[in-house]
Amino acid sequence: MKFYQLYFFVLKFIVLLQVVMIAAGFEVEHSPLFAFIDMLFKLSLGLFLGIYFWVFTPKGIDWEDGIIVSIGGFLILLDIHFEPLVGIYELRDKTLAKLFSLKNG
Image 1 (tube, rainbow, N blue to C red):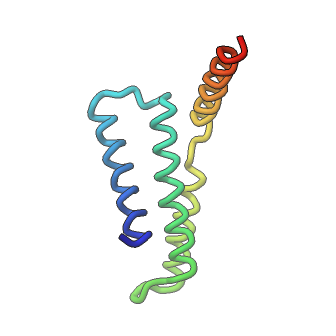
Image 2: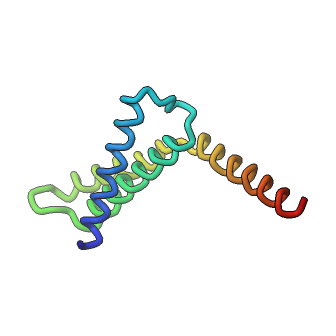
């Protein structure tokens, strides 16, 4: 399996995971897991659109249209909400603190 095929498989899995989380009634608004999945998807899609259409404008698309699509990709990057991701780091720090306090204490 080539790298780009694996990349698109991972993106499909991420979208499927988000749909399942929403359909199952998972509280997604403040969930660190959903924030991480959403950040990963937006980062992947934004970088792909931003870089690919800027550097390799496909045939049949004008150069100016490729620039507009790449700007759209970079705007997706600006839409990433980093505040819920701080909760992941706080959770990690609490877990590590408990782990080290159990080892030392």
